[in-house]
Image (cartoon, rainbow, N blue to C red; front, side, top):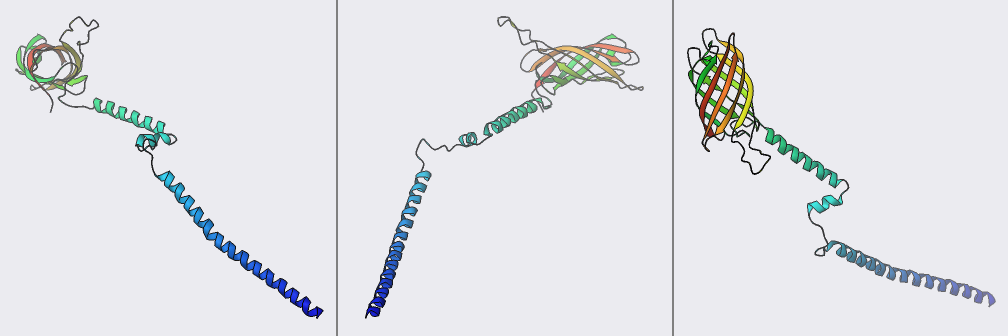
Length: 239
């Protein structure tokens, strides 16, 4: 009998232990979905709070995004420097026919008064056509043709000045624009010759359509020819 009770006691203990294990496992199984559900809900709330923008607190402009990035200020400064450099280069580009600081480009007629020499038409009194073609703000090319027995073609490149700036604002500036330059003088006779040319003169604006000009030209042929070219040109705005 004692042996039977002893076995029954062992069986009961084993049974109780099994029941407790099953109950614990079932409780854990029930708690796991609840914990996972709570964790999922917390993540959703956190996601919604971070995504929904509040008016006036969320930066949406590219400038704000750039400022928030490391080195964005330096990149923006470099872009501004490149933009300024590009504008400066564009201003320095050659634009034939443009206005210079000395005035508008023009084409016109003139008379040449010989001052010395006489080996070409430059040194004699003759009829001429002349022009100014602006290249940049300060440089121009001023082709001219002086007709005669030995027609001379002048092709100087000039540096244009401006006297429009006055130190005293109450003094009216002189409306003249001096220029100086060098180039080539071509004598188109039987013994054609190309010589070094020096020129200097002034432009005087008459109206918005017309400009008067006077220039002394010296062509260094075998014999130096010097002439004074005086004429009137019609202004134009470019090609």
